[in-house]
Every structure is written in C-alpha cells, then in structure tokens.
Length: 315
Image (cartoon, rainbow, N blue to C red; front, side):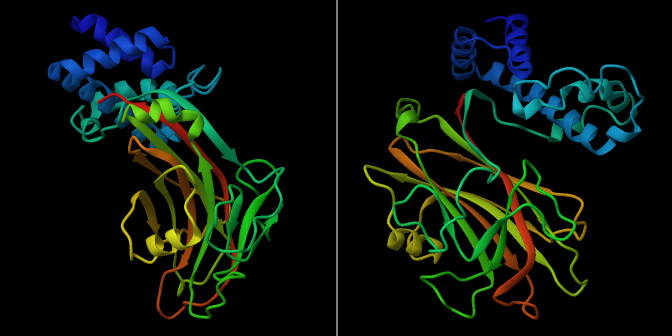
C-alpha cells in the first residue's frame, strides 16, 4: 500500500467514515508493514496532541464559525478534532510539532457500545457488596439521587451517591473505600474476542460536594476479565480485590479530587481481552485518601455516566 492511500484510510478512520472493507484493508496493512505502523503513530500522535492542546486552550481560540457547530465526529477518540484542526496552525507555528508527538493513542476499529449508564431507568443498586453472578449493579451502601446539594447529574436525571464503605455482607467499620460493581456478559461478542484483539474501553465521571482542605479523595475505574461459562463468584472476586489471586485487569486511579462541585472529573481505562473472555466486571471506587480522615461514611460523593465499549486493536 502506498503512503497516499494509507493516509487517506487513516484520515477516514479518524473522521469515523471508514467502511468495513476499508477497515480490514487498514488492519492488514498495519500488521504487515512496520513503516506504515510508524507513519500511523506520527499522524495519530499529532491528532491526539492537538486534541489535548485544544481541550486546554479552547477558550483562547478565535471564534471562527463552524468550530463547535455541526454533528460531533462519530469516532469518540477524536470528538475534538474540529477544534484541534483549527489549533494546528497555532501549535505548529508557536511551539513546534515535537510537543504533539509526545501523545500516542491506540488504533481501534469496529467500536461498539456495550452500555452507557446514567442510572435513569434502573432500580437502586443492591447493597450486597461484591457481585455473585448477577449482572445488575451491586455494591456498598448507596442510593440514586437526582441532585445532592449543588451537584447535578453529569448525564440525564440521576446519579449514584455513596453513603458508606460497607454493605449487607460486610459490616467492617474499618473500610474507607466505597465500591460499585457491574458484571457484563460478553457472549454476544465472542467471535471478536476469539481473535485475541478485542479491547474494552471503560470510563466514568466523578464529583463531590465541597470538602475541607484537610481532606483528600481518590477515585478509580477498573475492568476485570473472566472466562466462561459462568460469571465470577463473589469468592473469586473477593480473592482478586484483596490481592490473593491475580487477574487480567486494567485500572485507572485519580489521586486528589478537586473541590469544585460544578465540574465532573472523568477517568478511563482500556483492557486487552484474553481470547477466552466471556465476562467482565466493571468497578467504580471512591476512597478516603488520608489516614487522618479515613472513615466509613461519605458526605456527598457521586459517580455518573459510566460507559463501556468494545473495539478491535489493529496490532
């Protein structure tokens, strides 16, 4: 494949307009030609670098018509591309392209949403702690609320609020981490997973009411993969979360929640799935971060807009 054709396919991938046939062609080219992989990294790294720069400096960009108008790109990893493209002249002319090239993103194709949870039409999560085969939300003591003091949902009309870091099956008074779990059945995607290239991307948004300067909170999202034929038992999960048994998992932890209850903070993680994966467990966590403040209860800590998608890693 010549460079011009390759760049054309990459551009269509970034714009979210790549057909299934073109996607297969792009994947085959990436797998067989190291030079094309290197060219991909240069182009996509520049795109992502511009995207990151644009998110930080969007308010300083000139109000050129069309920057924020029109439909958002269908590819979720490049939804900021209209602004990033506008910023390119400023970035490349001002500080050079080397800065942008420090950012690298994986290439995914055939991305499909598994769920997006805004807690709108579901019953309150069961307060039974770790899942035990069920596929709904379960976790520590908490509730669904439409607001909490000045906090409004990140998406929709509901959000989940942690009340305490224990549950019906665990009454320990020393716990300081609130957990929320969901088991997801991936049998419908077993053909993709069997290729050994399937990747799960998970994200969630977190917030809290204003809290004292003396306090600090950490929050995280994790994804764990399990083979079939049945979902993991509570005992299996307990051994994993306590560190007794290793697991195939990814985790993104954010240390030091901000004190601005008007803004939501997002974390995300990606997990390459083993070929025998049949279930994943998504875990959202909120933790008291300092020894002095550690306690069982939470005053106003919430999570919302939990998203999980599956895609194919090119190489």
